[in-house]
Picture 1: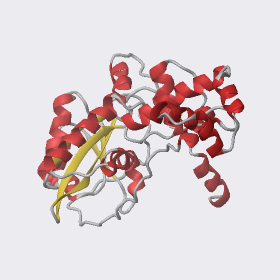
Picture 2: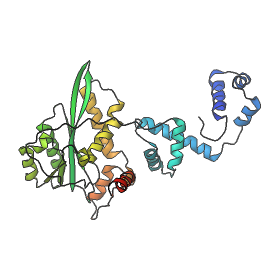
Picture 3: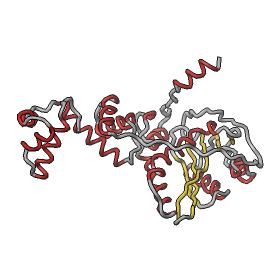
Picture 4: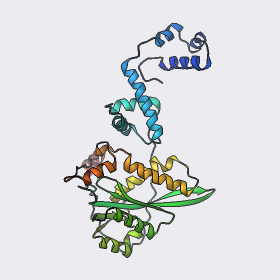
Length: 323
C-alpha cells in the first residue's frame, strides 16, 4: 500500500510479495511492470523514512480498529480512539489521509421511519423544550421505543427496544427488549431504572406514545415525584438525544448484520448497549465513555460540565433566514 511518498511503492511491494510467495523471478517481474531491476533493488535497500514507518504502524491500527468495531469509525473518531488507546497525538488530517488511501470509511446512516400519529389519553407540555444540557446525573431522563426486524424464512418478525437515557452523560440508565410494543415494555423499563436509581427524581421526557400518555404510567411518575415532559406532535427533534441513540445502534450494529433468530438479535442488542455504555468513547466527554463520566460525576461534589457545542450550520441558517 502507498503510505509514503515513493512513486512506485505499490509496484515494488507487489514484486517483493510475488517473489517471496510464488518464487517468480525478479527480472521477469520487473519486465512485466516496466521498471528496471536497479530501481527495484535501490528501493529494497533504501532507508525507510521515519514518517513512512510510522504511517505503516498507523495503517495497521486503522485496519485493526475498523474490523474490531465493525466499520463504525469515521476519521474523527478513529483519531480519538487511536490516540486514547495508544497514548499518541496523531492529527485528524493524517488519519483522514491514511484512511482514504486504505479506502476505509464509516458506515452510512439509513433513513428514519416516518412519524405515525396516535390519539393520546392525556398529554403533558414540552417542559424540556430542547434543553438537552444537564448539570448532573439523574437530572433529566429521556426515553422512547424503537423497532427491529428479523426474518424467519419469508416471515417478518419484530422486536422492540425500550430505553431510558440520562441527558447528563448520555448513558443508558435502563433498557428492556420485548416482542410486544405494549404498556408492560415501557413500565418494566421504568421500574428497572428506579431499582438502579431509587433516589432519582428527574424530569422525564418522552414522545406522545400511548404508553407514556396512559394514566397508569403518569401515576408511576407521580409516585416517584417526577415531572413529565412530552415532545410536540410530529417534532421528533424535541427528543433528539434518544433518536440519535437509535440511529447509532442501527447504524453501528443492526444494519451491519443479518439475524436469523430473535435470540441472536437480542444478544446483539445486549452486547451493543454494554459496548455503548462502557467502551464507546465520545469526543464531547474528552474521549471517555458514558459510564466513566457517570461514575466520576456520582462521586464528585461539583460534577464536570460538558456544554453542547453549537452547530455552525444551524447558526448560519438562523442568521440568514431567521432575522
